[in-house]
Length: 301
Ligand SMILES: [Zn+2]
Image 1 (cartoon, rainbow, N blue to C red):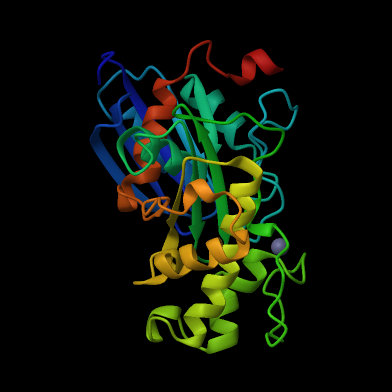
Image 2 (cartoon, protein in one colour; image 1 turned 90 degrees about the vertical axis):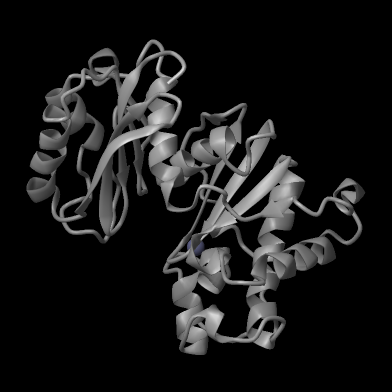
């Protein structure tokens, strides 16, 4: 903790919530995990952890599952939008935390927090503009510039970019919004529905790998053309299927069609995360450390 600040962090995930206290440089001092039950049941545990941590905190960093309003200028800042997690639709996460903990709050998405962690201490450390893609039960993405999540109207939803469907692939999209988006074609549920088991059960280079790698390669090609990031990190359960990233890289180049030639000799352009499971909570600590002129609900109201 170079600046000596001790901060709190929350990684709100779909099945578990990680709570931590640590340095604003991302060094963990203390952490625990609670299941993501109904907010009425779980928020007292969250408050109790920080109340009993025994250290004065200068702020709290939160990486939350979405969809959530993260624009501080919005009157709905910090509220969860419609989600299938019981009790969380419409829940005022930022208001609840601010009103009880009385601390400045830095709120990003769970993917955004992981991206910040990787940008400071992991696979995006030596890049200015990085993209973090998580491919698991869904596909989420975040963009970091100089170690900070890029401010935006809504958080990026790059998992819902429309792709060119393989003409022989007649499986129904697993996304209820789009017939041909990346998440609907290549995330975990789409793989399970199409193949009956996860990708790691199939041979590297086989037809199953190639189909999913082709879709994810298309997605990466779109990100290259739109953002021109210095590197794309691919995490998540599907993303970390052994052997998949080189196949995604080959597909990305195929879909770029020789365009963006500067990428051709970059062997580390697509890479796996370096921080593993800790990326999100470490990133949330760093986000709390980045608070200056803190975003608090009192100022927004
Ligand atoms: Zn979609």
